[in-house]
Image (cartoon, rainbow, N blue to C red; front, top):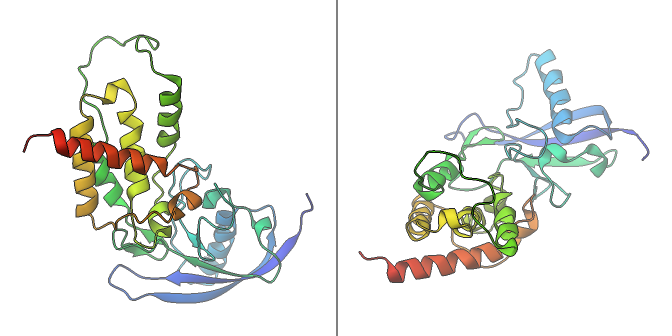
Length: 254
């Protein structure tokens, strides 16, 4: 693949804190390699700003390997940028052309307030998990790995759900700010496995209740969440969660 350098204009959202109105600022970056990752390009820009005595742009990052989900940016109107099934840290500058203007924003959601610049508070996801995204077991000697037989289809579907990295792209891309794909993935991950069966009714009721409490919107089946999910998690999990929720509501005593 041919390597080339480019000059770019960046239109980046700057916001001091959640109470600040914020706004876009323009930046120029030069001689950016097409083989750089998007975050490496931001590193270059921040070094430039620090050298000039200016405040660097705050953005989230950690593993930079497409695993942790913290590199959550809206790039040119798309969650994680133009490549499908891809995280921002795995987006490379060859996705853009010399002279392009790139618009970079934080996630836009009532449930994800801006902390600073491109960093948002996604602790709402943590509270949803704390409400029921776990199993309770008696500890003791480790059980043999093959002691509990699990249907291959169920195992594969659970694994698909477990691939969710909690980045919030589903919320950011949904016109309603819905977290249904995230929550349903966490419900399916455990409900499909024998270890998760004992608590599956209380789990789905508690997690959905917490999701609503956090202010996430409802799902209207636009499938934007699946289209922008960096792990390609299926909306079929939402249908499964709805069934689990309905059944739990019918069978659980008040």
